[in-house]
Image (cartoon, rainbow over all chains, first blue to last red; front, side):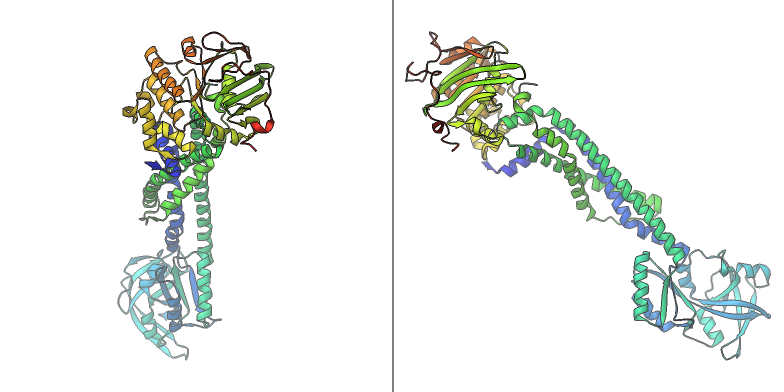
Length: 379
Length: 258
């Protein structure tokens, strides 16, 4: 039976690995561990922005939308802007309408919002009592509740004047107290619908806040799209949130890349050391092959083939381990499940094959330099 | 040069620093001859063997193997000669430990041309190891390992078989087996050069060359010693001097090197 030279070369490499397991175990373990960390880090690198983006959403919205100039924005325009945001990345969007109102002649700032959405855009809001659910439900800021009779369970009549100075009035029941530690503690909150009913003015708001799972670059792109497609609106990034997010994510990504790089370097050293030992142990075999007529390029190719096999096998085993590693880290550090990215498995295998080939360079040079006449005589 | 000579060595010396391992050695070996090279340790036997086997190059002199002047060849050219024309048999067998007997033979095919498993099996069968083909070297006796080594040396039909102490690590029974194989090869017309310390091995050869301190001390046919400088071409008798004449024309030695 004839066997092609390429096939026999691969068989030689396979036999060398399979039948000399103990010698190559160290290299294989090194490559496998390297691949575990590499795939784990790549997976985390891919998922970190998403994971942290969700973490950062706890600090509030990252995109503010207002009417052009000092004008109010129309809810119709806001609906158009909403369509521009990727649905899977839009965590929450709420319009906010501010009105100066009174209660028992004392002035307050009332804010009309969509409470279901504001829970998503401002997850840091803490409410004691209940969130407004029914028409006529009112939420008061902690500062107001502290210094007035507007407390949870009380009834309040809110009045004010519209743009035409016509007086309006509506009765509310206070269902909860809001604590944020910010300016919101000095406001009273009602549903946008109640505010529209109370004031008689509909379809407008002063501001809209959106919480999106996008990094600052993609947020800038979205803001530009909103400006271009809905010219009456102005969208801008909430920089105190986006800058912090970019900063933290940038440093974390850098750290992950650095760790991956160090691991690759250590893997390379491990493989190079092991292969160098292998070459020294196999000097007679190399000398014999050269005595039988093996050209230097064949000796080089055989060792590189062994290196590639170690890299591919270690890369595959390590990649499987890396999927588990990334999942464990994601669950224990970020408290979230992680979606495995299967395409990273061949990427890791290829990366480890490249690493082992580079690591084999010096040992292969040593192998090619073997003088058959000397080593076959035991010198 | 006569085409009857597979090997011609003219005034070859090998100098390592201040030490001359070979000094002005001239030998011509006709095709089909069995030559034993003898001599004490350090006499230059192995150096001469390495030069003939293209594993080393002389400091001075000229070696012509199968019509090719080795001095004209590059490193790759010498490698090709080893692959194409020489079969090496070692005292220590030098089998690759993680390959079976069959695979060890196939390795030589792989470097030569194309691997043919049935041909490699046939080579093992010729040395009586057909049933041991799937065994690893550590599962084989010394004699069996040497026979695998011989099968490997013969698989590519070399023009010249170089054996370095082929029975040096064998017991008497295995020595007889190996010598039988060499005798068969000789009968089939192979050219064999054996380096040996053992007189009984040398006695099997047609011709014995003795080196001492790097110099050619004796060159004789088995039986009565012959005068140095006399050709020992089978069938030609003692009718041609070995050392007195230089190659007739350089071109005749370089017919394959161009």
